[in-house]
Structure formats: C-alpha cells, structure tokens
Length: 545
Image 1: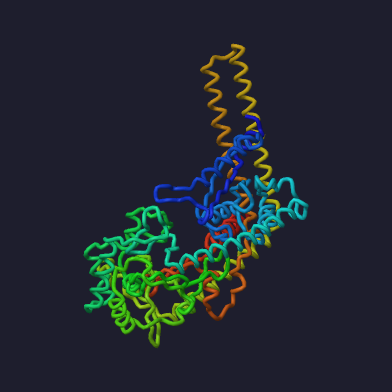
Image 2: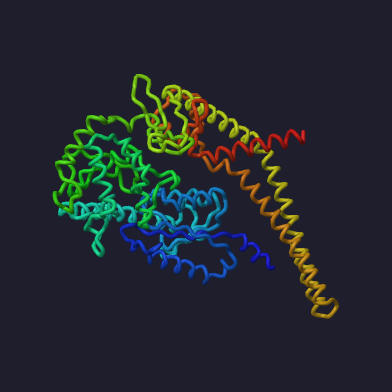
C-alpha cells in the first residue's frame, strides 16, 4: 500500500453541518431538514473531487435547529472535544457562518486553537483553507471581516425575528415553537392553538382537585398511582420533534412542581402571554425575568380550558400554601443539587438552618430514596474543601509536568524512534508481499502459497499499525496538559464559596447520604487525564530508578 494512502487511512475529516431553527423545515415526520441533506451532499461532493482526501475517514457532526451565535451547540461541543483529544485532522464546512456567527470566538479558533492543534479548517463557499493562510495573512483578515459581517447580520436578524414575534403575539397568535400542555398546533397553521382534549382533561382535573382541597403533592401522588401521563411523556408519545432534557424516561413522573406549574399558568384561561423572559444577549442561553407590566397579554387568543374564576380561586389558594421563593437564583447551589439515587433535584427546605432533602418518595412511595437532611452550611464547607483539594492536585500535577519537560523531550524522541522503526518494518512487509506477488505471477509459487504469505504480511502490518497508533496517542497525551488553562488552579486557598465559583467549576452535586456525595466537575475528564498521566509517569520513573 503506498505510504501516502496509508497515511490518509489514519486521516480524519470532520464535516460540520448546521441549520438555524428560524431557517429550518423540520416537521414531526422528518428527522432532519432538507438544508441539512443539501449541506451534507455539498461537502461530501467537495471531498470526493479532491484526490488529497482519498481514503480519509469522514465523521459527521450536525446541529439541526441551532443559532450560529450559540457556541454551546451539542454537535459543536462533541466536535471540539475530539479536536482537543487530537482525533480530528481537518474540519470542513459549507461556509464560515455554519461553524459560528460570533466573529470573536470563531476568530480565536481560526487564528489560535486550530493552528496550535494542527487542525486544517476549510470553508468551501468562502474559499478559505487554513493550509493556504498563515496567521496575520490577508486570507485571515478577509475572513475576520466576513465574520464581522456575519455577526452583525446575525444580531440584526435576531432583532427582526424578535420584533416579528412580538407583532404576532400582540395579535394573539401563538409564536412558541411547540404547543404547551393541554393544546396542540392546528394542522397547517402553526400560529393557531387547538385544545388537546386528553391533556386538557388532566389540566381541568388538576384545578378541580386543588380547589377541592388536595395539595399539589397529593395530586402528584394520585396521578402517579393512576399512571396519568406527564407532559413530557405525552409529548414523547406524540413524537413531538424536540430535544427533551430528561435523564431517564423511567424516572419521569408527576411532582409537586409540575402540578404547581399548571396552576400558575394563566394561559389556560385562553390568554396569550408573551415576553415573560428575555435573553441576556444575542446567542446566550441565559434568560432574565421581565416585570409583569412589560408582558404582552391578549385575552381570548385561543379556546379556554378553565374559566378565569377557577384560575383566580386556585391562584389565591396556591399563594397561601406556597409563598414565593424570592432570591432563589442567588443561592450558592442553585440547580446543582441532585439525589444520587433517583437523579432528580433535591428540595431546599428554608429554615434557620437550610437543608436539602429528596422529596421523590412523596410522589413515588416505592422509589426508596434516603431521607437524610443535608445541612446547607456543612455542604458548603465540604464542597469548598473539595475545590481546594482538586485545585492543589491539579496544580501539583501541572508543576510535575513542567519539571518533566526535559524528560518528556527524551520520551518523545524515544517514541519517534519506535514509530520510525515500526514504519520501516511495515515497508519491509509491503516489499515481502510485493515479492510474493511477483513470484506467483512468474510461477515460482502457487496462488495458495501467495495468499498464505500475503495473509501473514497483512496481519503483521496490522499489528505494527496498531502499535504506531498507540505510540502516536502516547505522544498526544504527553502534550494535552498544554491545551487547558485549568481554571481551578487559582482556587487552591479559596475561603468563600459563591454562586459564580460553583457555576464555573461544578456541573452537578449528587447526594447519596449525609456522608456520601459526588461532585461532577465541568472539566472532570481533563483533570482525570492529567492526574492519571502524571501518576503513570512517576510510577514508571520509580521502576527505572
């Protein structure tokens, strides 16, 4: 096998495809839009027409229905994770705006991150190929200018979309992408809502039970016992095309919060309500609440499920039984604490000594979650100590890596020699295979003997290629600590736990008991790789010493 072709078999091309929700043509019957199909065919045709990509492995990453200003798209995150792991050699997109419309972020990737990781980037319609442009060249300047235009266009488009939605909402039209529980979109008219009678019966029953004296917890327990479908389960049953955030379908059941959400929703009286929240900035996933006087409210926009009188009665009862929780979003562990057994959020009990407890057993008595009460102050101290410990471990590992830089150079040189030796062995086996073929053609050996010899050579070559890949992975791992800034290191001596610090470092905290918790770090995989690599090298040095 020619050496160039052999290299291309190990060459990985990532094609990235994106379509914005506003531009999409998705429906319940289609898994992806026509534009996605067109982008895929366009990029693959581009690859097929270039001999330099012959034999390369192609991976596809697709975000269908996501804004280009949002760099937290699922497929983009998977793509960039593989880039950081040195598993991608080249990225190809139809045009630069498919990858992203935030020109500052995109510029960082083009000018800093991708070149550092030796990743080639191609934007077909923009005639951009990073192989032809060095940092600071006219090509990058042109791309940067184009990205500024994309960014300005995206912001302008977002404002126009927002303005159009507001105008439609003021006329009483539904502008939400999906109908809320109790309703369904009218066939052929996405701005009109019709009553979903099965779901509406559940809504009416919630109000009837609550106004007759049952608590939200009792209603949730009753529905779970009877097997009443939750809003999420009903949407799944109807195959609504949406990316639902549910850890485990089997763990989706009625809770007090679900019931209360229905009781709080005045839209069931037939009112269209728009503008209760707004995004903090274009492309951001974070929203902020808007004061009630700024909402857009239209009476009689769609058929009512309950009367205004029933809603007002339930509202007065709900206010008395469940006073508001002002300042919830400022709490240190806001939306971070989960039960380690059922995976659901734990409830914070407000008192002189706030604590967390799992309330799932109130809705599913057979769930078996422990009822330990976790003191908030004690949990803060435990998490604070864990942050300091992890920061110290990571700092120590990074310092050890720095001290080993000279040794790493020798280590890499040894790996290079081993890789070269294996490559030479592969060439020898290729020559042996070719010689056996020539002997068969000339009649010196039989076809059976040739096939046997060829099989032996190919098995040997395959083993050598596996070893080369393992050695290459070892070289990449030796440099991976350079790719991260390890933002936990500055907190080796932190004394105060804040909401901002928890958001920065921690994904979730799982409580198993009063003496057992699990912290899921946002960069946990990077920390583990760093610590594991350092431990292995230190152990190897001790054995050699």
